[in-house]
Amino acid sequence: MTKEYGVGVIGCGNISEAYFRLIPMFNNLKVVACADLHMAAAQAKAEQFGILAQDVDALLANPDVDVVVNLTIPEAHYPVSKKALEAGKHVYSEKPFVLSIEQGEDLRRIADEKGLRVGSAPDTYLGGAHQFARNLIDSGKLGKIMSGTCHVLGPGMEMWHPNPDFFFQPGGGPILDMGPYYVNNLVNLIGPVKRVVALANKAKEERTITNGPRNGENVPVIVATNIHAVLEFASGAQVALMASWDVWAHRHQNMELYGTDGAIFVPDPNFFGGKVEVAGTDREPKDVEVWDHPMTAKNYEFAWGTQANYRGVGLSDMMASIATGGDYRCSLDRSLHTIDVLTSILKSAEEGKAVDIRTTCTQPAAFGIDEAKALLR
Figure 1: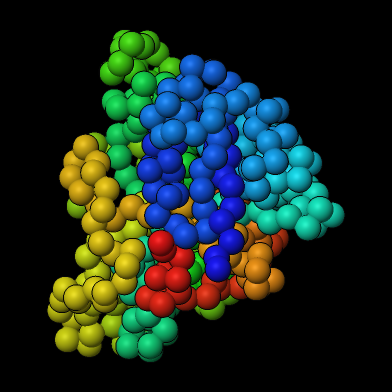
Figure 2: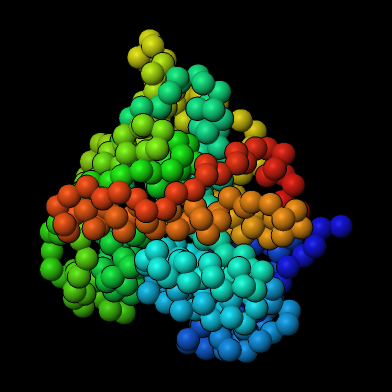
């Protein structure tokens, strides 16, 4: 029988809704409690989902909580995760799970001492569309991937988020906020990064909130909001990444990878599903029917339509690895490598020179149909 682990969620803001709704679909997870600095927020989620509302200390002392899902703001991820590990809980954090290599290594030290696991979102690359792209690349159909482009472009968060301040503070910005989706997927598809070089700037010193109770209030912009980077991979591939919140419109694809025998057009790594296109030596991109992967199905209503959404699969995979003693895909090593890449991009832009990546990791194991089915109820 599959062991079911008790989940405690710390942080009951915007992103928590998806976790509360989706975690129950995994056969080894059960949400038992939630906490927030604002008790009213925790109580509202607790009533909505039939769980226990606690303060943070009480949740960390709760014997029914085996693993903490850390959904606090980026600057709080490290101290909250550290406190959870010290309390003897496994930790799965939203991205970025730390803001420096040193913070990540400190969490590793505590986890190793206590025999605990640390993992981090994003797990969107485990979605059916991205794993199908991985399958096509692994098959050799495209030859060796040698180059590519990635674009994550938009006008910012202040139009829809009621409290967007943290997006423009240290730990925010398009590289640390959206970059994890792209770098995680690139590591999934190509492998680890060796070196980066980048330029950065910002279009505005302040942003004006245009929604909610703070409508009209200005928010200071502390971090770069427009970044151009080139990532050199250990495999020899070179991929250009542009991440910006200073773009009102564009016609760029989210992700394109170019091999010696063809090209693949990968959907938005921010989502689990989407259209995959492939071109061969005929130079004609064609839709490819995505395989019958359980994490391709559209199952979640967003304001803009129904999408595939399986947040928590990385957590489920991590907890399943306890029984086997093996690797898990959203591991500390891979998550820390992503942080190293992203912070090195910002460092390169600041210093005006290429930066070697200090960490490395293995390419995660492919997440096929059978592996995905094994985690679902």
